[in-house]
Length: 246
Image (cartoon, rainbow, N blue to C red; front, side):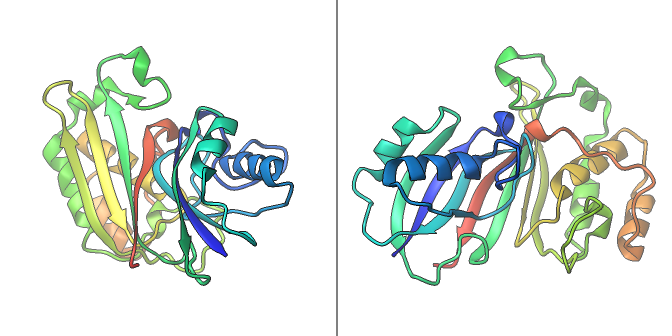
């Protein structure tokens, strides 16, 4: 039987989702708890591969097991897992369901705070200089991305992907007038390695006058890297929605 589990995690203490040698990851933490409970090696597959320090408020994983274990699964595993990983629900799914390949869209949000707040440590990027940026230019740069479907300029080096094509459906900056926090939201069918953090850095650089809209459009048209790359810190980034067709 195949099961799908919705969960969330705070990525601060982990080297990303995917298991790695000699590194603590969310996947390895969950698999260790599953082994402890069921005394069987159970491999879980996630809907994506978040980087070190990146969070997920909505994440889906799947795994196979030879009997129905849904009763008390969430309650018992949450008691065993560390406090920065939380399971929400478990459902039996079709045997061909795949948490990664069946997702039709993923959404990320990047959070920036302009007022120092100890409760935002590791959960939002403290960057008061964004107040000096031209917000309309930041949004203009974000809007331009929607007119393209290849994003080599926003892919980290040493990646093994075969295509740079992504179909963006949302790219938007918002500002909370009450506390001055900034949020960048982006939705696509897929994302390249480091893509969102590079896009956020680019839009801020344009807003601060360190880059021009023309430079952005030229990089997208020629699929060449920007002269000024900026990957903003990981701790402001959240995978916050994954959508499936069924």
